[in-house]
Length: 109
View 1 (spheres, rainbow, N blue to C red):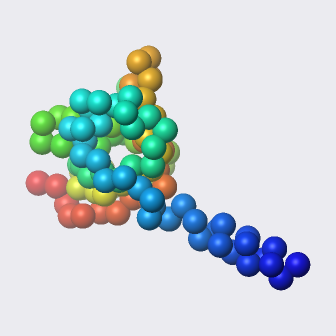
View 2 (view 1 turned 120 degrees about the horizontal axis):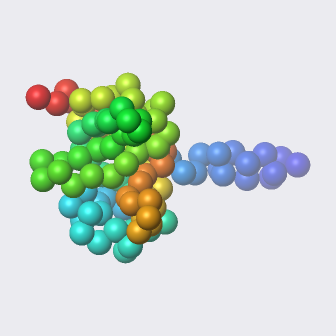
């Protein structure tokens, strides 16, 4: 039983982003299929559009990745952030990242 608790504790500690691959937004935009299903870490400024409501991060060259869940990224609107999450690419849905973590780097100008 004790071994089971130890295993559970180790499992709970996993998924903290240590295994995330550092990828720039320009790489995700240029070759999204290569990272489909991967845990990635990237940086950008949080932007949004109201109709339909969606949030994304973008770089200076306007390379973009939509970010989910909206409730977790919305408080960082206008900020430069580092995100870690599961990246998905679909021809019909585009590039999207489901957050595991978001860390503000500094306020955007």
